[in-house]
Image (tube, rainbow, N blue to C red; front, side):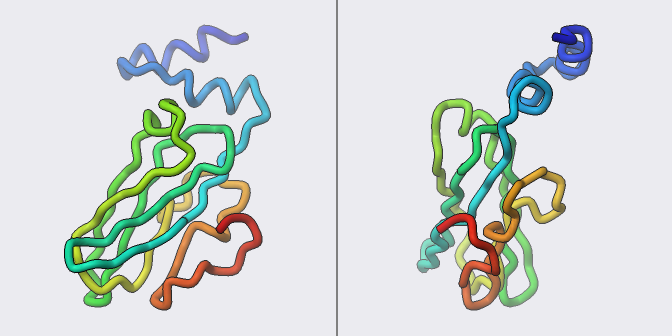
Length: 130
C-alpha cells in the first residue's frame, strides 16, 4: 500500500480519510446511493436516503421548494461508517418541487438515476433502487 499517499492528506487536514482511500484505492467497492421516501408534513420534510453500495461517502441532499428556495443538508460519512444502510434527513416545512442527492454531481455513483425526484415526487428514470 502507498501509505505516504494515504496518510499525507489526512494528516494535513487532521482527519482520518481511511473511509475514502480503502474503497477507492484498495477495494472494488462502489458508491450507490438511492433516494427513498419523501414525506411532507406540517412539521417538515423528511427525506430517506439509502446506501446500496459499500463505499461510504458524505452525501449532500438538496430540497428545492415550489417558491424557488433551496435548503441543503449533508449526511456525514460517519453515518455509513457506523453501520447504517438507511438514514433520514429533516428539512423545513414547505411545498417541495424537487429533492436531489449530490446536486453538484461530484460523487461517483454507479446508478445516479435514482438520486432525484421532481415535483410529482416520482423516482426519475433509473432501474436501481426503490
